[in-house]
Image (cartoon, rainbow over all chains, first blue to last red):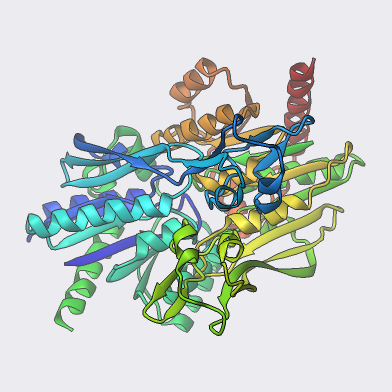
Length: 302
Length: 289
């Protein structure tokens, strides 16, 4: 079983468009590859928008609990206010306790310190995980209700489900579309990957975040390759990325031009490689995919 | 007044809008401006504002340290920990710093007082002034650390409720806990989006946050290309004012790639940002009446 994760650090560099194109190329290649897809960007799950999916299963996801106060038992002693390090417990002028659910960390310290057991933890359904079939293979995805915590846990859950499905149904490849950033959902998305593809862009912001995500993935000992999207936007930026990659021994597997067909393909809900197979961006992505297949093959041999 | 710039989808232009708004206000008037870069996973506003970073403070969270001489292995600490960050394994208590939220609950419940707390560094906060006099503060999460929220909370503590200060906050993409921690207490949300299916899909999540937290919001449409019909329909339906539009133009994309603020690429934009700000002021006045 091989797993490729697509990351970027900075948002909007083209992770999802490239991921969908890979799924398409895997299917139409000379030796079609059976791929399980995972959309690990559960805050902003967009992969399904460029696939034709049919939802098969859904499961509610319970997130971290938040504290609630039973006013009948509360003696207004104020212990909880002192204990809480997140300023989530406030007192009204007459001493009554109110809990701000957005600030509550779910640590339950207040629950264990309350002398009259007036506080308790309550878990909410904060999202849903889905299994769908699609024109480009099975897709594991999720929706996190806006404003919720625990996206790392939800990412881990759908990845585990995808792995189980792959084992059960004889799939040998898992393709994970990752979230932006470098924090907990990114670490969960990258876990167990054989290879990370970092999609960067030659912008000052893109380069800054590229270095941060590379450092993060390196921390977890996952091999990294890079692709430069919108490469013709800022030539000096490309030079900087190439130099950085050379220093860090990261192979740059391709350069994709700033090409409006990627956005057009998104508008019609298709991977760019099936919408405009001969566009400059499609050709570049094809080359990248072939190189990745070679690299993944090499991992298998080694 | 606290204005937070958010989006849902990444790469829609949050930092572009936030930095040029701050610059336009700083160049135009005399009100003190505080800029907070709360995208602590991928902070980029410094590229456009070019502050002289003067001061650096480390951000630590307190994690437990067990005094083996006092510990009786009763496991009360691991029972109360909601994050599985402390566990009794054989004859030892093991702490997992990256799972610890620093709540102190284990220390409080330990019957033997065998738990002390140690500072664990997870990031830094840096500040400085820009050439235009903007007070700039940014947070940075260490690479490999999973939790951005403690740094965001620390950044937000730097805000003191002064009447005449304008605070502009750059937010991380997405719609989960870091965004909520960032926009809490904001007076207004600028939601930056683009007229694509991805942009609209993720805007909906950002709008839900603004509704749940009861923060008034308006939209900036970036990379407009004569194709915003569906997006406009959505904004109209949701009663979200469209505050500003920025066209899809290669010239702008190239300038931003080089690290130029939008108002330096097309100077005309300075007036548009002032008008954007005036619309926000008017909307807030209307709300308060």
